[in-house]
Image (tube, rainbow, N blue to C red):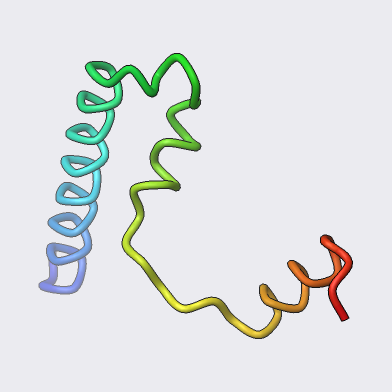
Length: 65
């Protein structure tokens, strides 16, 4: 196995580990009665700036100019 494949495996394992931790947190949180795991996961994703396309979509959806 070359180094590139090894790094991808490690990154995949780390990502799954973080998702499993978040799932366990969701199971013990009362939010599980209100949010699906996918919604909970999306709400706990790190902040990132919105793209112009996303901003335009929001304005279009909610009647902005």
